[in-house]
Amino acid sequence: MTGDKAFRYRGARAMVLLHEEELRRFVGTWRRAKASGVRLPETDDPDYASYDALLQHVLRASRGYLTWSCEKLGLRDPGVEPAPDVEIVDQRCDEYLTHLLSRWRDPLRDVPGERFERPEYPSRWGVLYCVDAMLEHAVMHPARHRFQLEELLKGAPSGK
Image 1 (cartoon, rainbow, N blue to C red):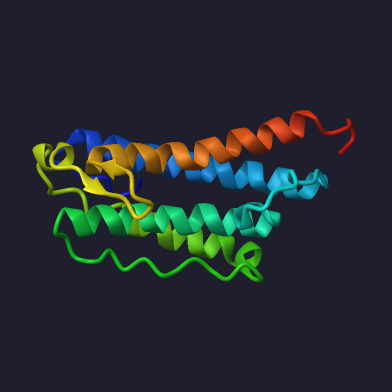
Image 2: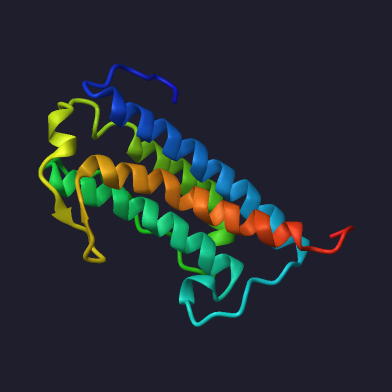
């Protein structure tokens, strides 16, 4: 993170940095998997309909975790544009990733640590989270999808 200045709550700083690292690692693995020709598993899940749908899902979720956290903390909207449509997400990935990660860098800097742990709020999918737990979820979401893609790649025939 360039221009890194102090966060009041170092746990938030850690989650922002780890989220950026995991999101970049996911994109790298996603690119390798897409180029490999390995097919995604058959599923009714629209987020796994294609490699591009999966990329859009992970980018869209990252935006959602930050906007939800800012909303619950009473902060201004971080101004993250929606993820590109699935038809163009591959071509716009690098540009959007730069935008997305730049928006993650500032909103949480001045929030005291105790505000991250209490209270808990319903997520957009109904599970209760404190903001700290949502930030941990934001780190693990791209890591989990990266892991799934790595597992697929391990099963790929050599030479792909």
